[in-house]
Image (cartoon, rainbow, N blue to C red; front, side, top):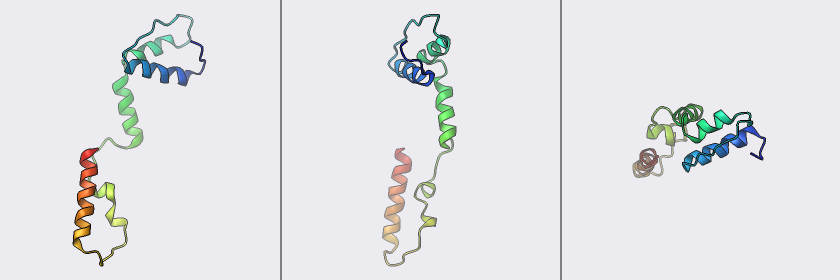
Length: 97
């Protein structure tokens, strides 16, 4: 492998693993065993869970968490129809993602 940066090697191994391509790596490569495991998607689930913990998306969100209407100043001139439309929009985003 021409690239010596380990993080780039791992990223490339994840990309190859996603395409279900596994290369035969030479034994003299320092982290060949780790790269082969990544290409074979051995720890893929653990990687996704680790990313979800970092992004704080392990728990499902409510529309109020996404839209955060409690932080906006109250405007009485628009009326309840606009608030209902905003809640519907927030629900759509929450359910869509």
